[in-house]
Image (cartoon, helix red, strand yellow):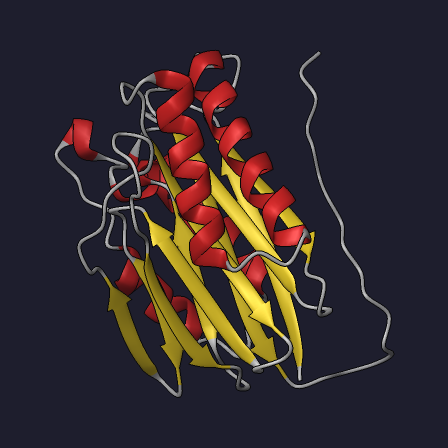
Length: 235
């Protein structure tokens, strides 16, 4: 098996900074974690918050701290720094090589989509953003790694796309349609979801949008780990 991870993100229209932050970190046991946070509101203030949260989580995961404990520590840090007046959403996707599982940690009201063997699960258990009170606990789900497993996490800008124009973004239905194609790549899925959301917002995103797609497929080729990043720069 091999795991492929893709990220697509865009900032809110007419803002200079995205309030979302996404980072990838290697775990001490050889696995990987993807950490995504969305700071309250948008712009530079939200970016400062999401960056602080993600860096706190990444540092703890790199030291071997478990995902749930890292999420609670980040929440307590944000609560202490901002006096409980600022919140952020937080998602962690982790490949645990010891247990051969995908660990999904969620402090984000937006659902996580999990597809496997032509079955779709919308993980929408009630949970709270971090930072508004102490010891905020995440919802944690652990599933076995298997070929065909697809996980999609995203910030609320995706589900709210089109709302200003009386339209809705049905993320689960979109994902089902994409998976009907023959083995779409994670990047294709992330890009298609983002493009659909931007169209619903008439090419002027009403909020920051970040999408992380993780897919497990059959191993092909060599054993080299690869990562690529595309960062458009404003002139």
